[in-house]
Image (cartoon, rainbow, N blue to C red; front, side):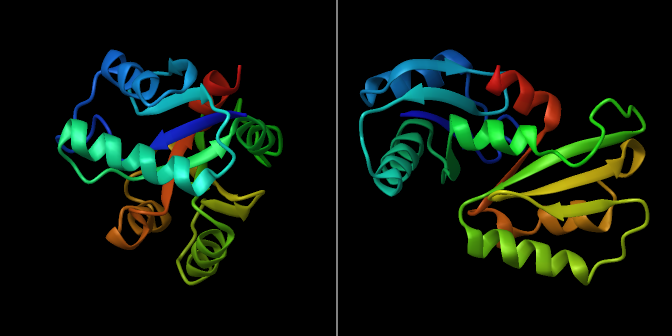
Length: 174
């Protein structure tokens, strides 16, 4: 099975991990075809292990032990990542807006995040549920200041979500 580990909070906020070190760690865990994408904690690999929860726990523990931080990842299959990309409901060529895919650890998290966004002022933001994800489209100038952007930054979502710009998702999926 081909997986993508999406690390939360890497190379921001003082947690710096080089791509070469990530590749070495994942290969050391017995994964094959390990590749990293960009410097934001994206690792694509193959594994014969059948239990996703075990892979996630093992990877988080290894990251924590090796790099000395409390690691959180969202683990998706490559097919799930490609489906999220393919079903993006926004125009990714629109340069006035950023389109993001918020990957969620499970359906409960996704549903809670979608419900929470109903209570926030929207402005020009658009937020829509997708297959295991939440899609977010926001004016470029408002990404970090938007109500939803601030909500995503809350500690409540730290362990169960991570977001990627659609351009990053496209690079991982290629």
